[in-house]
Image (cartoon, rainbow, N blue to C red; front, side, top):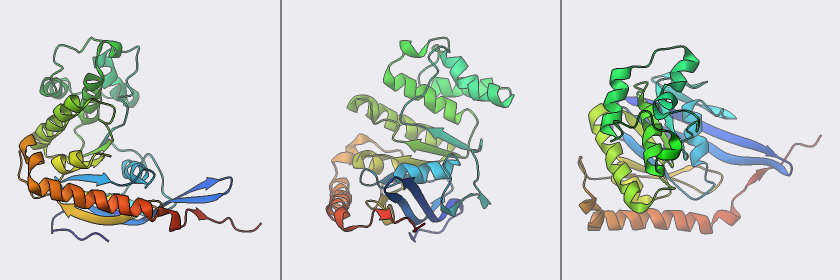
Amino acid sequence: MVEHKSGEVKLRVRQATKVYPTASGDLLALDRCDLDIRTGEIVSIVGPSGSGKTTLLWSMSGLHGLSSGDVELDGQKITKPSRDIGMVFQDANLLPWRTVEANINFPFEIMGQAPDKAWIAQLMHRVGLEGFEQRMPRELSGGMQQRVALVRALSFKPSVLLMDEPFGALDAFTREEMNHLVEEIYLDTHTTIVLITHSIEEAIFLADRVIVMSARPGRIASEHVVPFARPRSMEIMATKEVFDLTNVIKQEIVGDQKSMASRPRLVAKAAS
């Protein structure tokens, strides 16, 4: 289990295990993961492709059940999606026939609840989309669409925001802008954030802690505390501390990938 400093635990993952049935046997994707996420913390999770990062994140959201183990939010077991947990996916997933405003309001319509228009207006101003409420998704750039998705996820005022590689498809400059935006929103709201990313630099810039997962079957391999105060500027990315930390994490991931071939991937089916 990952050790951490004292503090109130917001999300608690215990022995999280996920097995996917396949034609050739059961695939062990996630293996007995233990992890605590503290209130008001930003945690980035990195690891090799296929290491179970997204599986772990989706189990935190209640969208994906585990084969065994538990995830708790404020001491309560997560068994289904909750308005206390916002989610930003790899794609913005905006409905193309609805305006920006209608896309943001859609989840409220499904639940039969009135949106908090004043709060949404504040978010739209914060992300720089004030005045774009009546635009259609096709009129927005990829970065703008992800900003809408971010507003939609935060419109419920969730206490936890989960982000599944949300900026991976953006160009480097837009991605940098989005990283600054996430930090600004965090400083305003102190929402607990868990971020999946393939960019070690992004993980370091945004996070208080970087969690490294092993190659499949996914396990929590290591933890690295990021020693920078907030707010952060891109100048820190040129420091020796970031250079050294990036190399350490990269070597952990590369070394783990090289040893992946010797790891068990399948759990044999029981004889019928």
